[in-house]
Length: 206
Image 1 (tube, rainbow, N blue to C red):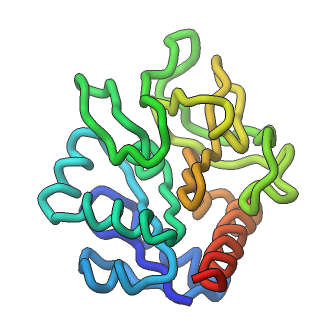
Image 2 (cartoon, rainbow, N blue to C red):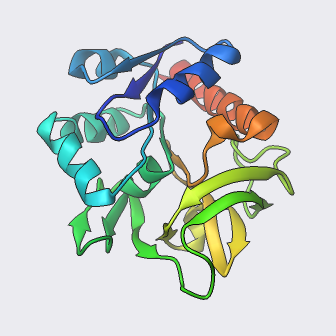
């Protein structure tokens, strides 16, 4: 199994790679179209602002590559900003179109809570999937000011922070984690193991 971690100068790629190394999953940090298409699964990390991240993906001709990978049925996991990029659009610094892989919009957190949302929050599992196994009540680490506003059918787990913040979302073979699994201790490592299960299942069906 080989996971491609997308390198587009907008993600904490090294910490994600180290977490995968720790649990014994082969991975490579890459912006190569051929390497991404050859991988068994893809992780799209992300820190920073939505418009700049989408522009960086476009500059590297990676938008169509990611959409092609998903169309082929390969699993994709977006992390933090990478999760937000999976949605249709964002209102951060004006309107910006996203990858359109999970229906929904990215919106600013209500000002009834401190922004950015930074720290540990409990997961409330709303639907069972490989990434939510045994995750009810576990604490995970968030750093964000915007959240995914999407239909409940796409929300696998959430955390309460003024609003119910979708923590894990999914649509077919596309998954997203608003928090940082690679910084969330044992719970985060188990979520990455769950993504490995998704890849194993998808590979056996191809």
